[in-house]
Image (cartoon, rainbow, N blue to C red):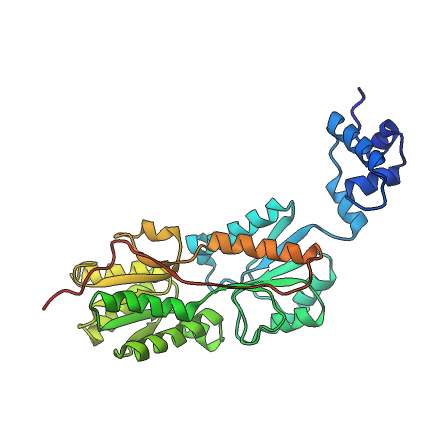
Length: 342
C-alpha cells in the first residue's frame, strides 16, 4: 500500500476531500462518523503523521507555553529546587503535546506586551510572584492566558498553585517545640526579596511572627541570599549574637547546607547539639548530610500541575479559576532531635 506523506495523499486514499481529512486530524465536529472512521483507518494503517507546524499555522495557535522564572542569581538554574519547577513544567507541557520555552531574564512592559501580541506562546506561567505584581495586571488587561506558581495579595479570578508558607513555617516550629526547643532561629529569604514584595519572603516573615507569637518564644531570624556561603555567614553571625540557639529553620536547601557547615565549624553537631528543619524542600533533602527534616514541596509536581492548569485554560475549560494552596507536610529525617539537656 502507498504510504501517504501529505494530507492530499490521505484524502485520495480515503476517498474524501482534503478539508474533511483536516477536520478529522484536528478533531473538529461536523464529520459523519463513518467518514471519520474511514479517515482514521487510513491514517492508522499507513502511519501518516500530521505536520504539526502546518496545524499550528492553520489554527492560529502555537501549541506552546512559556515559563517566566526571573532568577535573581543565574547560578540558581543549576540548583535542584529551581530545576524541579522547570523540568516539571516542561514535563506537563510534553504530556499534552505542547512545546515549552523558558525565560529567566527580567521582562519590561514592552517585552511582555510583545509576547502577548506576537504569537510566541499561547499562554504563560509566572514565577517569583510579588504581592503587587505588574505582570499580572498587564496580562489581565490584555486577556492573555496565564497561571501563577505563587500568588498575589488579591487573587480574585486568578489561577495559581502555591505553598501555604505561613502554615509551613508554623509547622516547622511546632515540630521543634515538640522536641523541647525554645530558642529557634530562622534563616529566611533575602532583604532584596522582601523589598521587592516577593510572596515567599513576605509570607515566610508572617509565618515566623505567627510561630513565635503562638509558642511564646523569642523572635530570632536573619535574612540571607540563596547561597551556601552567605547562609554560612548569616548562621555564624546569628550564633555569635545568640549562642543559646538550639534549632534552625532554613528556607532553602542552600541555606540549610550553609547552616550545617557553620554549625560544624562551631563544633555543634547536627542534630545532637542543634537541630535543622528545611522548608519547601523536595527529595533533595535526602542529599544533605545528615538527611534533612523538611516541609515537603515537590517543585516538579507543582510545575507539572501549573502546565496542566494553563493548558486546560487554553483548551476552553469552564472558565472557573483554579486556586491550589498546597498544605505543608513534614517529613522527619535525621537532622532533628530532642533538645540536649544542660
